[in-house]
Image (cartoon, rainbow over all chains, first blue to last red):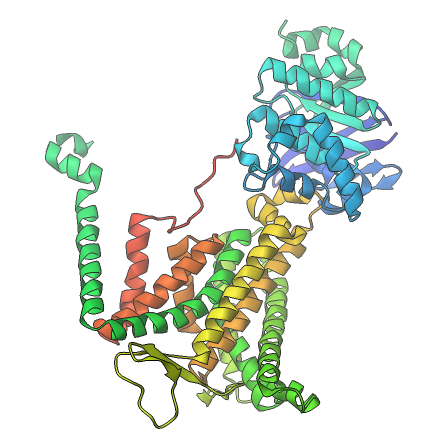
Length: 235
Length: 371
C-alpha cells in the first residue's frame, strides 16, 4: 500500500479522538472516508499530514514511517492536505496563494510551468490571479485550494470536505476535477459529508464512527450497505 | 432590563455616542485652530518644530515596524523591542569608539574622497548594529518565546516584560554597558543648513543663522533617507520575496501555511530578526541625533513606538509608519506650544483618543470573517 495507517490513537487533551484506527490507500486509488460530524474524519487527515501526531500506532507512506514527522516534512515527502473550509490565504493574491503551494519547489522554471498547467485547468483563476484570495467565491476558493495543493506535485492528495457549502453544479464540477487529477496519477484520500457524491467517484471507502472504522469495502459495496443507506444516503 | 425604563433622549445619547463624538470634535477643532494660529503667528518656528518632529517620527517608525511585524505574526507585544533598540545604540557606540569601524574604509583606501568614504563607514556601523540586534532577537525568540508558542498569550507577554528587564539590567552591569550615561561619538561631523526667506546656506560655527529660517542638519537628512529606504526594503521583502509572502501566509493562518510545507518556526524567527534589525538601525540613528547612550534609553522610545504601532493599527506596516510620524509631531508640537514636561502625557493621550474612535487604529486590519 502507498499509505498505511495502522492502529493509531489520537487524543485532543483528554478526548480520545481516534482509537486503534487502521486504513490505507493504494497507489492510484480514490479512497473515501465517510462518516457523521465528529466521527474523526478531519482528525485522521490532520494526523496523516502531521498537524497532529498519534500517541501510538504507525503511519507509513511509501514504506516510510511518518507518524512523528512534522507537517512541513510530510509535504516534502509527497502528501498534500487540502484542508476543510479551503483555508485560502485571504490577504494574498491568487498568484501568491499558488506560489505558497509551490513553497518547497526551488526550480523557478518548474513553478512557471506548473502555474501554466493550473491556469489551463482553472481558467477562472487566471482571470483573477491578481485578486486577493479572500475576494473569490466559494467555488473559486475551492478550486484555488485544490490548485494550490497541486503545485507541490503530490503523490497523495488529502481532500477534506471539498463540496462544503457549494451549489450542486459546483460540487459536480469539483468532483469531476478530482477524478481528472486522479487519472493523471495522484492518489486521493477524500473525506466527505456528501457520501453519495464521494462514493460515486471512489474506488474504496471506509465508514468512520466515533474514531473507529465500522465498515469498509469497495465503494459499490459500501453504497449498497443498508446501514449506510439509512445513515448517510438518506434512506 | 433597566434600559427600557430610560428616557428616550438618554437612550439616543447613549446609542449615537453623541457626547463622545462632540468631545472629540471640540478637541480636534481646538487643536487645528491652535496649530493654525501657531503657523500664522510664526511660520518658521512652527515649521522648525515640524522638522524636529519628522526627525523623531522617522526614528520611531523604524521601531514601530518591528512591533507591528512581530505582533502580526505571533500576536505578541514584544516589550523587549525597545531594549533591542538600546542594544543597537550601544553596539554602534562600541564599534565607533573602540574599534573605529566608521573609519575602516578611510584607513584602507586613504586616497578615496572623504565624503563617500565617510558614508560607507557610517553605513557599515549601522549594518553591524542591525546584524547584532537581529542575532540577539533570534536568540531571544528561540530561548524565551518559542517554548511558549502554544501557551496562553499572557505567558509570552509576561516573558517579554522579563526579557526587557533582563536586557536593561544585564546591560547596566559594569562589565557590559555600565549604568552610566555615556556621551556618544558620532561617526561623522554634523553640518547644518538653513532655509528661509533669506535663502539657503550653510551654518558656520559661531555665526548666528538668519532669523525666520528653518535649520536642519545632515542628521535629519540621514535619518529621513535611512528610515525611508529601510521601509522600502521591508515593503519589498514582505510584498515581493518568497519569504515575505510566507510571512504573510503564516501571519494569516499558521496551520495551513505548514500544510504548504512552510516551516513556520523558521519564518517567525526571521520576522523577529528582521524587526530587531530595524530597531538596531533606529538605535544608531537615535544615538546620532541625541548623542547620549544609557541602559534605559530604550524604554521611552520603545513605548512611543509601541503607541505609534497601535495608533496606526497594529499588524499594519504602513499604519506603523503613519502612527510614528503622528507621534513625532505630537511630541515636538506639544513640547513647543503647550509645555515640555507635558509632551509625553499628550503623546500618550493620543493613544487613548485614537483607540476610543478607532479601536483598530488608523489602518488597522478589519477582522476578517473566516468562511
